[in-house]
Length: 419
Ligand code: NIG
Ligand code: FE
Image (cartoon, rainbow, N blue to C red; front, side, top):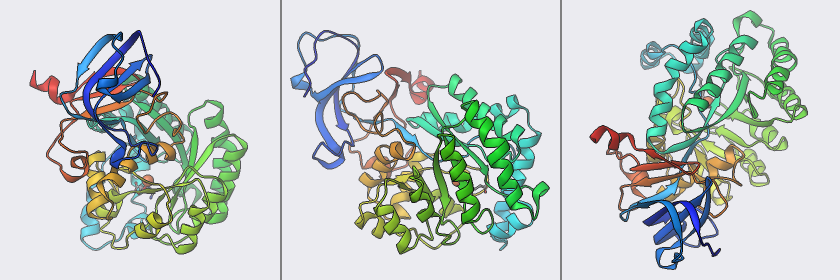
């Protein structure tokens, strides 16, 4: 371990670490009775408390009282910025109308697009705030937010600006993704190729120029865009230096995964209908398989993503909320960890890796975060639990007793409420 002496900003002592670092050869990468030293937002040292240097002079010391410290959680797939409400669709689905049918009737994504177009930037920020706060209260330190409820330049930019504004107001990192190719807006009915042209020639260059997103996503599906249209968007994104990711194989096997891996996509997301060829493509790629059990649950899907095959092929699996008003109106990554286990058969340690190490890869930040390691960002969450498995196994309202974001200690909401 690196030697460390002298001044530092923060010492967290008397904790058990779930480092999630694959180089730490134990379940959860655990180190018991440990300490973490933080300086200028970066983890400087970690190890057994009895190896802490004597002459360390921390500005601030926290006694973790034997709680578990994990990396800050990362929600790597959300549509958190939107307006409106789609509860009526929930009723419709229970009355037997399918998600695809509702979309074909002009509801679904388009219903949220209409509400979002009508909102001002400030109203959009206000409506999105409680969802972001809910995630942060659960130890989330990085959130990916997609546009895609605008489908015209003005509203797509408004969504991305709202995400940027929220990042300035909250202690959280927001990775922004442009999803202009989410569905076909009625103005382009019957003219999907023309719309893709608009996305590529009129929207993407502005998004890239204004640095409003670092990656680009497409909904590749029979109710949205086909492989060829998806590839056009990927090609343009690549030319503009943006990373890509894909909503793939959610409702059918469109073979989007194979295309996405050819473009070195950060992740392919959903995957209930992923076939063997898609698994093979992932195995030979750097692309993460992101699982979204919330959408599976709300759509009462019965077909499971091929978890055993993904696991057997060693493909990194991330877990995310897919937080959106239609198919996954929930703002809890802890619930996703639980559903990842109960619905998809992940182990609790796979679930924790899915919201830390593998989620970091899904947003392209695996060299900076997602594990507790010297040199990495000091994004951490301290949990009042006996065992890290509890984070997936129980939903008793446990919140982190503290969260550290870029080395800064955040007051836990529960604690401040109890004061
Ligand atoms: O990830 N699948 C496409 N997009 C979202 C749903 C969007 C919506 O229904 O509003 C998803 O499930
Ligand atoms: Fe999604």
